[in-house]
Length: 175
Image (tube, rainbow, N blue to C red):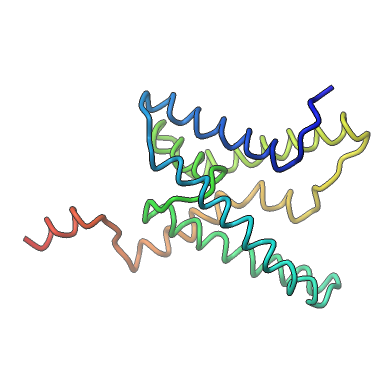
């Protein structure tokens, strides 16, 4: 049915299509978008590195809930900061941020819609290709439906205390 490619290869194809879609929507080549692949590669390697010690953590339902809450909050803060600083981020986080900027639609709506779409595609592909839905736990589903709002909330809290700008706007403000 589908070519025999690894999950990693399919992931890069998907991310490439997201970046290509953004460039088509902007009607120009955006070199900084390509750096999101470098960030994604580093992120993947760091996951592999940290998997060694993460697997030694206690693994029961209470600890899983605690891990979910801690990681959810940290991810919301991290993405909110990245969005405000305009930092390169992995293509799957770059897409909602840039699509919101291009369309003018609120980020939280774009992010939730994107995450739910990815969730539905994953559920559909695993069901039709493997005969059952795999890889989607309650945390994944909960995050898909709420992460956009969580990032928006974290961003609002950050905006109350900090102002972000690039070196050109900050230099002009001091003059």
